[in-house]
Image 1 (cartoon, helix red, strand yellow):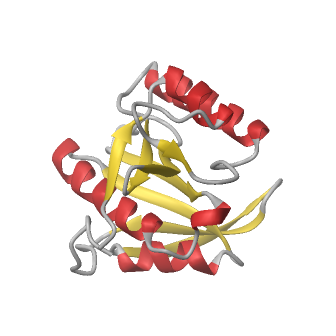
Image 2: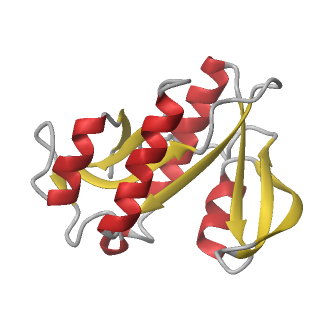
Length: 167
């Protein structure tokens, strides 16, 4: 049984994860989490959001291995809504880590009294399934100048029941 947990991502953790050296006794998925330029952008995003609201990012850890990252894309707005993003290392995709991690984010959001939103590219079916399994519904579309047609999501119901730590 795979155990997934989220661990708050600190600024220093990014260096360890990008280098592949691991952090806090955890190894990093083979091939890394994402390309260095994307990890650099995510680190800056975590810094920017973290200056106004914490936590702002979490490592996805499966059985002692850092396999991905979940983060807030901005601090919560006045209505308490906050957009999330998530990604899993290519070498570890399709194993349920994102689904389990987003389920844990739902628990955190309930405790923090914030409401989660997300966006996926219209062709990103895997991420769409992760959101649907966690009680998100489609609430619209928008055109992004860089990413193209996006589906907008909002968490509205409890995630499909399956223990967040099991696979």
